[in-house]
Image (cartoon, rainbow, N blue to C red; front, side, top):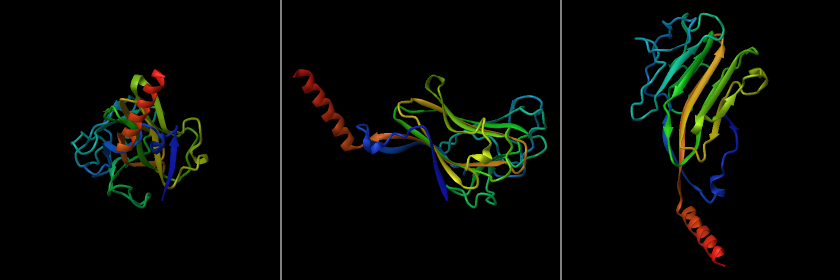
Length: 242
């Protein structure tokens, strides 16, 4: 079962003069990445750095293959701890012990127990018809601490940041967002490019999030909407001449 969470107003397509049919601009459901052994970071946990894919271990990075959007993973030393060097279940996964099943396909992406901060930066997606980004997130039900945080946001035109989910400053246990798939949406109407980020700052193996079914959506005007726009322009023109 999924719960819907919307951060910010979502344009009601059917109620707008710019109404149209949503079309998928880009997407990923993490179906095309490698699922392998537990991931062990070979970098220096005392230093912020990008993460790399290791042979035989679940991929943490992905290069756009023409079907699914690419992304890169990174680590930030926010706790002075061992980071991901001690081995953690992160990256592409088909483990369903917590989530029951993934919302699109048989794989998703897991982040957990970074002993610091683990993040993802997705490829920048451009469009002249943006509507929104939608995605599914599962937050494991456990004893989160007040210094744990989850933030998912898009950086859009001019550096504006639009949150899909931001728990910074709150105790995750108090937000009633654990234990089921959540539908997250960010309104990108009028934007021309967006870069999606996902970050988890935590320090326990039971503190996990899973993500799946990320879609960047645009809109193609329907014939009715196009007629409405034309009619609106005609009315405006007549009013100006009156």
